[in-house]
Amino acid sequence: MGSKSNRSRRYTEEFKRDAIALVYSSGKTVTEVARQIGVSAEGLRNWVKQDAIDRGQGPPGELTTAEREELRRLRRLAAEQAETIEVLRKAAVFFAKESDR
Image (cartoon, rainbow, N blue to C red; front, side, top):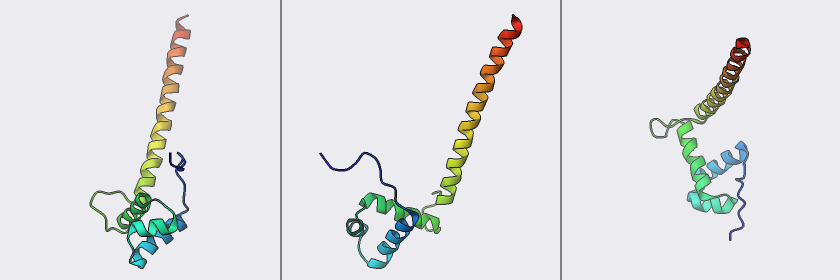
């Protein structure tokens, strides 16, 4: 059994920026840098990939960090609206039944 927790660790944006800069400036592989700073290689690789996308150097169609945040915001808003619609639908059914009495 590994000693890793089931919860993912959260790193500050500053830490991520510094880690990405270290990858670019050190001449080391992502795996070597990840080992050096104590993060997973896959996580660091994802940060570097997202940084390239944010700088316009990623594959076409990939979302920037700002676009991802906006998409999350819109999804939350849509979920809230769906809940509101469901409450209103139930209220309409309830009051329609009450008016029949």
